[in-house]
Length: 114
Length: 114
Image (cartoon, rainbow over all chains, first blue to last red; front, top):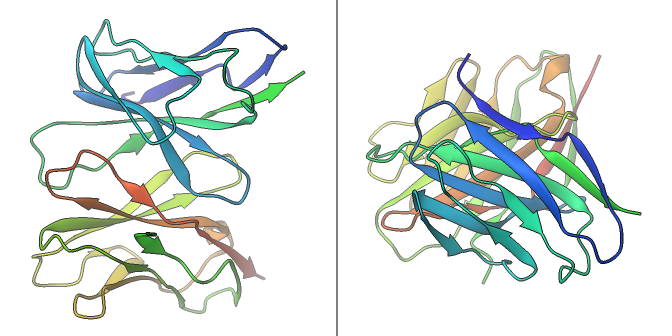
């Protein structure tokens, strides 16, 4: 079945450690996004990518990094510079050329600090 | 300035009743799109319905309809004949044409009572 797969579902980070969240899609979508959600809050955009080998910072990019080497994959690294990484992380994708530009989401990764 | 406002942090509704979730937005762009997403306790964001600013009719998708009042900058979600499975967080979101980013409101938590 087509969809967006995020892994792992739960992730724990130690102080000073970098961790990478995986996002894979088989929808042949061009654009991909990473959002952060804190309890009781809406989604905030971290990074997005419209094409392979190109990405742009969102509203809260500090302490995060991404890569887009393949159309299907858009991994997010939470670096040690991100001092408050505990949150729910959602990946999304959408196809280009559609007037509606609907974003479809994965099931999310919950990151906690040990 | 906040662009999406959801004034109801939580709502309790009896099963089988209709429910309206409020959303107001702010934009100076005449061309934009409005979205509603559902987030159950599992965390995944599920796309429900889309309304374009130039659409002549209110959008409908099964039990979901969007009460779009352009002059009031209001895009309320109406769920008819509510079911227990409708209990979730609901997010209103907006995208201005030409912008690849979607802005989310803070959400409304809906509880359906048996």
